[in-house]
Amino acid sequence: MEAIPPFRISICGIEELGDHCEVGVTHVLSILDPDWPVPEVFGTYGEHAKLELRFHDVIEDDIPDRLPPTEGHVTDLLAFGRNMIAEASSGTPHLLVHCHAGVSRSTASLGLIMAQALPDAAAEAIFAHIVRIRPQAWPNLRILEIGDTILGRHDALAAAAAGVYREQLGRRPALADAMRNGGRGREVDAARG
Image 1 (cartoon, rainbow, N blue to C red):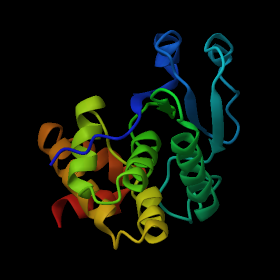
Image 2 (cartoon, rainbow, N blue to C red):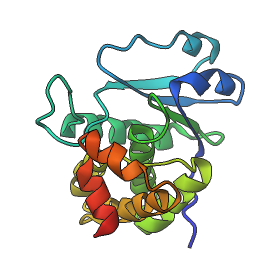
Image 3 (tube, rainbow, N blue to C red):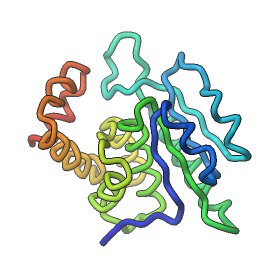
């Protein structure tokens, strides 16, 4: 069964934000590194609701000078998603989720928002939908682990992400070393487990 959310979706990286100015975005989840400036392109988007979160794309606590995603970040993004659905009295909301590359933090965050909006949808169906939109998806495992706990999904989202990692490594095996070198070996292990 396909997971079709009750809102339109766009996912992108910072460099692609300009491509989404005129597509009717009503809500923006902006995920940036803590010291990154706010992209000026948002001034061309017209009226929209926006949540800006700031943390690094890491999955462990012990990486020097890196702020990992926290339960507070995940709670905030889920509240943003709930409010978007609640406010949708007329028309279909259009959610744009972006991080630096539109690959990891954004796809994990969208997975949680979709899981919340579609509580009966299988986690695999949610990520299949995300991968159709963003084929290079590699969802941040830490965000999913926190979200699984908050949403009561019993690690289903993290387990489904392992299938996404497996698919990506099948296409690009060199990603395994890159991810391990970046402190994300648990994701590679999940793909192979």
